[in-house]
Image (cartoon, rainbow, N blue to C red; front, side, top):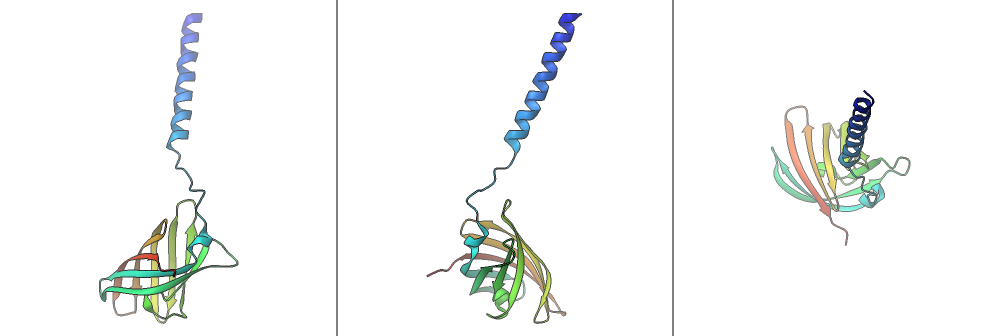
Length: 143
C-alpha cells in the first residue's frame, strides 16, 4: 500500500512539474528594448485606401508628454499637418489602438502592430457618406 502512495506522489509531482515548465515555456517574452519614446519622429506613410487608392505621404509621431502609453499622429490620413489623431500603445504587445475619434468631420478608428522601425495599421475613415477601409505601412523617414 505504501508503494502505491509513493508512486501516486511521484506521478502527481511529475504532472505538477510538467505543467509548471509548460507554463514558463509558453509565456511570451517581453521585448525589453521597446520604448514608446522611440516612436517619436517622422514616418513615411504608404497607404492603400479602398476609396483613394495608394498614397504615400509624411506623417509625424510624437509621444504624449503626460502619458507615455499614448502617441499623437500628425497628418494622419493626410488630413492636415496640424491635425492630430491619438493612439494608445501596449508596450508589451507592441499593439496600437486608435479609439474612435472625429477629425475634420471624419470618424476614425483602427488598430495596428509595431515591428521595429515599421508600423502596420488597419483603420476605417467614415466621412458620413462612405467608409474608407485603409491598410497602411509606416516606415522611418528621419533624415
